Every structure is written in C-alpha cells, then in structure tokens.
Amino acid sequence: MSGLILAACLALHATADEPVEAPPVEHAADPVESFRLELEDAKALWFRGEGDLARDKLRRLYFRAVSGEPVPLELSGECVIYLGEIEIERGSVEGAELVWRWLLQRDPTFPISPYHHSLEVIAQFELVRQRVVDELPLAPPPEIPRYPTWGYAPFGIPQLRQGKPVRGVLYLGGQALTAGASVGVFLHLVLANPEPGLFP
Image (cartoon, rainbow, N blue to C red):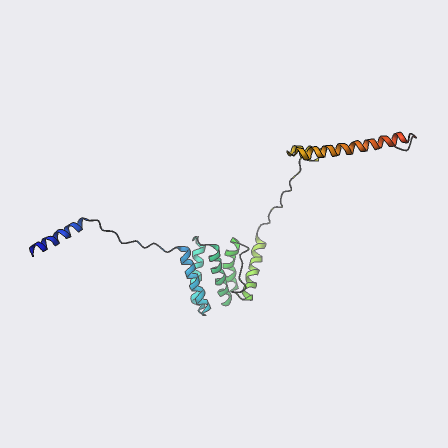
C-alpha cells in the first residue's frame, strides 16, 4: 500500500515539473467574414419586416466601414444601399442621400440591383449618383501629341527616322520618281511649245 502511495507521489512530482501546454487562443473573427455575416443577418431582418432592427445593424456596419475597417467596397456598398432603402421607407430621403453619397464618392459607377430594390429606391439612388457625378471636377482635356517637324519632310525621311529603312527607301524612290516625272513633263511642255506666254 505504501508502495502505491510512493509511486503516486513520484508521478505527481514528475508531472508538476513538466511544462503545461497553454490552452489554444481563439483568434478574432475575420473582419470581412463577420461583416458579411452581420450584413446577411440585417438583410434577413429587413426581409422579415423588422426594419428598426435591420436599420440598427446596418448603421453599425456603416460606421465600421466609414471608420476605415478593411471591408471590400462590394460588401460595404451593399450595406449602404440597404440602409438608404430603409431610410427612404422611413421617409428620410436626406438620410438615404447622406449614406449613398459616401458610397458614390468612392465609386460613382457602383451598381444597384433592379432585382433586389424597388423602382423608387433605384430612382432616388440614380438621382444621388447624378448629383455626385456633377460635383466631380472636370478632367483636363487629353493632350494632343504634336508631330515633330521632321515628320513632314519628304523622300522617306520620317520613315528612316523611325527605324523603318525598307519603307523609307520605298517612299524615297516613289517620291523621287514622281518628282522626276513632274519635272520631265514640265520640260517637255516647255520645249514642245516655245511660243512665249503659254507658260509662266
């Protein structure tokens, strides 16, 4: 009996000195995934007719996005569109425009689904989009590249300058032949009509 007690004490002493593994630390949820799950929950509340609860959830998500949380614009944009829809349902067009402006100032082309939102909501969203686009600064006109002076030179010089020798030689030969033919025709006419006054 005493041997069993002694063995148990030795076993306890041996295990007491061994390092004890710490319990695994639970990692924080991925912010993007948590945002997506809360957004789906808020949409489900809205579809069930619980507008106030859905609005509260969407407003929390909106403030997360506005505060700079790294959430894709696709998710934060969907959140903002539904929040604006609820604001319109509550009679606050100004509230909808406020949150929609935040989205459209980041992406004026952000789409709104005609399958998930009413025509009234889409019309109001497009009005806000147009206002935001109208407020954007005008882009400067594109600069028209000016052709260098040598580009207007004859006899294949532009082609030779651009490193196109074959084309340059063809232009040179063609223009030289044309010029020679023109001079030859002129001299022929002068010699064939020696009377003064026919040609300057």
